[in-house]
Length: 357
Ligand code: AHG
Ligand code: MN
Ligand code: MN
Image (tube, rainbow, N blue to C red; front, side, top):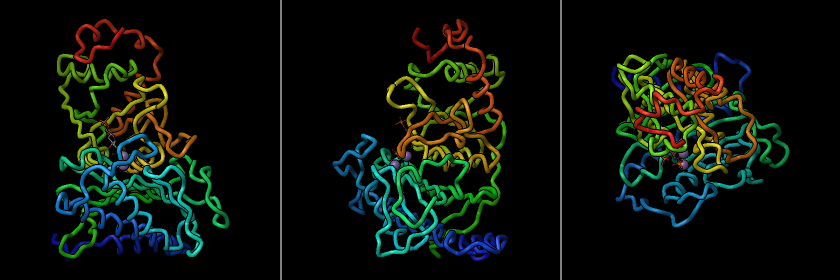
């Protein structure tokens, strides 16, 4: 089908809204403006060195991470593209310590927008796929300034979640709680076109993704799972697995939405002050919402990640998501009595990722 025949994101959202006769138009305005921001970021990312925006911003963000110029630019684009619309009560971002208040010159709205303006940005200079992740919550009140507490809602409360991926093609993947739909940016028309309706993640897979350089910090259930995958056909799983690690979660989530697989950035003992690497509100929850809406599962290893009541804006969490049967297996390993917390001689001896004892 050529792009003239396809439905645009705008048409898709208008048709979705017709199913809810009482819905106002502000939710659609919000999503369309987020999409517009993503188009702008896509152009900046695509320009690379020619755009003069590569490299470090010579600043450390609230995460203690080196900010890239494109992190800062993308954050500003999200703010400026959404603060005027009248649909938001506030915003929160990976790149800002505190919530952003909608300026008094603009009307205050009913929603909160939470985002990671550029995910995978440590890879931006090596030209791999990066993306923007966003989550929409209802604002508890719109007649007063937003507080941190307003944002501390479990992922189950999200009314929309999605990401844009800036890869060989730019795509927007979106859920409003009615399946996952993928839109490809048509470079000729400059519109997101519906190309992937109702994505479904296969429940089984032979592909997993984990940063194996952290293996000495993993908990026993994770070591067990990875060891079993690595043992391949002659091991307990009886089949060979393939491994991937892009170090850009958006790109990993996209692969998993397209063909299945399992992603793990589990809780580990690397830094006792951090329960995991990824952030709950603007990484784990929106990706979890997409994955679950596509029939997959997103977990901390111990419970569905979207059930976790956040305790702080930039809270980190262990995250495991992807093909349902694999994620459930990993949860089972976490929930089984602790025989596997002791090093399992079979796997300790044979393990490539040997656990320290
Ligand atoms: P961000 O660029 O927004 O800080 O997020 C990067 C995240 C995520 O995209 C990726 O999965 C992970 O960091 C990679 O971490 P490692 O460098 O530890 O592999
Ligand atoms: Mn990120
Ligand atoms: Mn980021």
